[in-house]
Amino acid sequence: MITYKNVSIAATALTFVLFIILLFFPDLIFFIFNIEGAEAALLLSRRAAMLFLGLAVISFFGRNSAHSSLRQVVCLGMMVAMFGLALTGIYEFVRGYAGFGILLAVVAEISFGAAYAVIWQKNR
Image 1 (cartoon, rainbow, N blue to C red):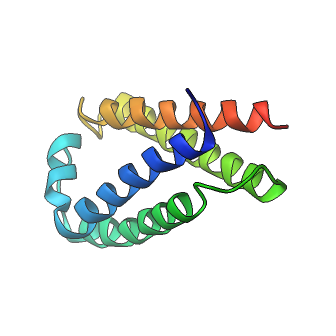
Image 2: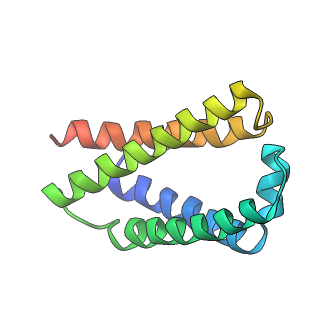
Image 3: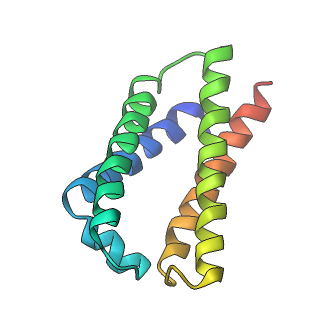
């Protein structure tokens, strides 16, 4: 069942794992996406890690929030972020700048975006 709490717990797990990987093991992402890990990519990976940590904190500590306008904004923001990541992933795959592995991320991003969209729409 798609509930805010369940989606938030799953989002916490995913974003925290991404934080760890992007900060400490970015070569794993480079390998999965079939991209080169130059210094610029490592810098951006570490910076993205901090954004994912922030999303993990928001998701975890907001998981028990009752319906409110603030929770709706969190749903909307997560929905936009996830669909935006999916679109850029598809774009980079089509351009040939990312390998087949990025489609794994795209599927997860579309799934989370859709889950947050359902919650947002249901509670409008």
